[in-house]
Length: 129
Length: 129
DNA sequence: ACAAATTGCTTGACTGGTCAACTAATTTCG
DNA sequence: CGAAATTAGTTGACCAGTCAAGCAATTTGT
Image (cartoon, rainbow over all chains, first blue to last red; front, side, top):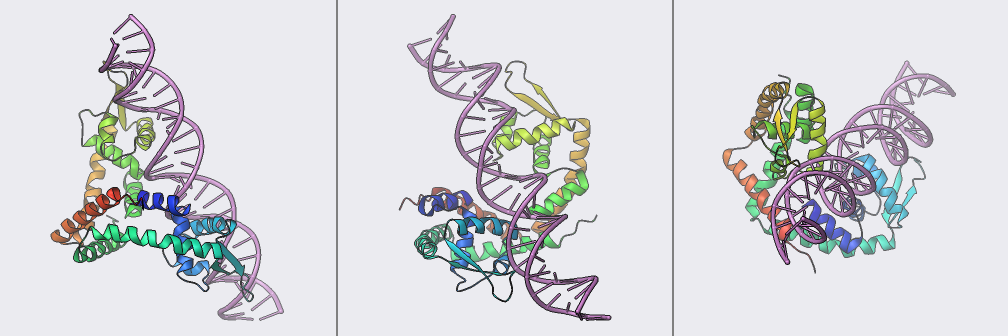
């Protein structure tokens, strides 16, 4: 599944998967969001920092430091970034529909429910024995 | 979940996750199996080769080249390897039970069924549009 | 028999991802 | 105020995993 997404993004947008995730995160959380807000999305801050740097270098994202707090950077898509985001989004939505379309609504719900339970079980089990 | 397994293996056996997977693969497919047989288990052959080298260097696995075909290596656990395998297996089985125990039998079945469908959908969808 | 294809495996180069240490800016609190 | 704790973000080091190229042994086809 990962490889599929990677291939689509490379062919359609010239982006890596983490780059797309960040671009989409910013695109869907504008007008302003700091990396901290993105951090809440279970996205490693180190990876975020590095891939964001690429996006800024490519001119897809503009980052300007806050006036009051010089630590925070406000991120938004550049014109090119927004165009790329909006032209890529339909492809990724289509992929998502195609993936989830192989399952019934009930199956989708059960799948995510089970996944969540597994995650919780993995996190809570201590195994000090 | 991955991190949980990694921590258990580090604490109980001093193994990395891929090392354990290889050790368990050999341990459960003795008396003899070449890396090719392991390759069928969706295990990247490059990673297999490198991690196997570590296991051999650590004296947990013995590798002897086939008499007739000098390309293939027959792999089996050393004494220490077998002891480690058999002492680690219960911990990993307990983990698996704890994980799957958070789900009903029906949920487990539905989860793997959905996962398989998703994998197929990802593999088959072409997205040439 | 012997060149060409195949097979088993190794190596190199690269991306993704995680953790810990670090810097700098800011807030908290005695 | 000013030292200590917190927060935002960067960097370094490392492991997992994948892909392609390579090498040597073997099989195939003529």
